[in-house]
Image 1 (cartoon, helix red, strand yellow):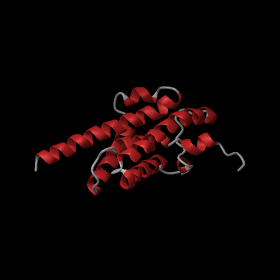
Image 2 (image 1 turned 135 degrees about the vertical axis):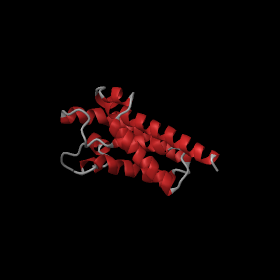
Image 3 (image 1 turned 60 degrees about the vertical axis):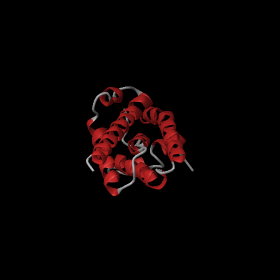
Image 4 (image 1 turned 45 degrees about the vertical axis):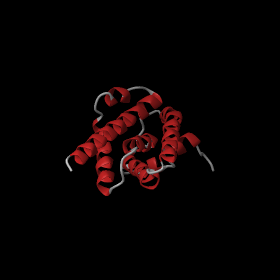
Length: 153
């Protein structure tokens, strides 16, 4: 294949990031679907998460340098990895799915401290860490909300 770039292929999550509209949301949806299919298999799920984070760090900065653009929109492995963190160890239900999905997208968009500080970092750190923080925030909020719901019953 002419002009095939493995780093771009991975960083764009198999070229999903090249989709012209809402590529980050589609990558987040792909990660959420990993939770649907493998969320109840923690070993497999953590393996996918670890690989996604590692690949994001290995490829994001390379693609950023290749394109000459800070955190290019086509790099969506960060959203995929971040949403895997957001969904980790959550119980499956449609309400949890949609709540966690939209909460992650909101945290990713609004970049609440320290995500906003990480975002300005160069290379892969700047690309990956704001989404990792958004995933952590989402997971914490969801775990607390689910705990409060269980106490109210």
